[in-house]
Image (cartoon, rainbow, N blue to C red; front, side, top):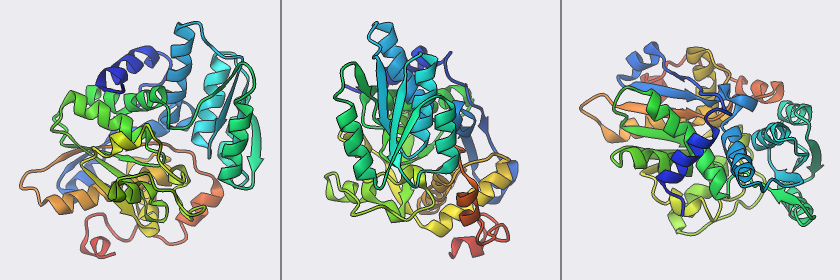
Length: 336
């Protein structure tokens, strides 16, 4: 059973294999909003995203038990692909990645540079079917991007590490949700330290399978490929391992594309970090939660910045409209 102890065990296992990424904040943003916002910069993690934690935890655990496979296969839209490629190379294991043809070019190039073979398919469904077939080969291990207990435990170490770094009471933790690995791991990490900490998720309105699943009480699947800036949260459905944990989230928000672009621009500007839209999206969930709460006292919020891998084409989409004229927390920003 996945629990807080699984997060601690994963952290002890991988802490010398991953970067201890910094927790940063913007004094200006704090002043504008009247609350303290802390950002766990997983965009500075090896391979540029939190995904490296989960991939490393799976392989490090197998290595401890002398059970490393002969080869690894994985399906991914980009960040998991890079993480698997890098982690597999660290353990001297060949890796093959199955992905969609529209995968981010920068993520695809990095995956191949780390030494993995990349197989592209017309749709995510085709890629998922191909990886299942490849996984049947003798000596092959399939490491899914989120629906695996050791992957979830590894992803949860980002929040666990951040809460050790912060010398203050944290009121709420926010994380993006694609397949739910990061958010479910974050929930286990935070609630295990202090069950008063609220854990809130965010996903694109255009890819809202998790929100639909939470409303219906069963796993819902997107009808087709979603049109969203947040390619890291474009998974068709959450997993059987992640969904029962996600059901314990304190709140969950669906974020419009304009809001995703808005916060991608502003967080890059304020934090001076190269964050991708999936990371920045979560900031709108913070805003929605703060407005909903009408708190009498300033809140301290931790935001998991999940990654920083964004190519020129996606950046051009983000900057189709200049949002920096609308200050965070202003009446103009809140009205849109």
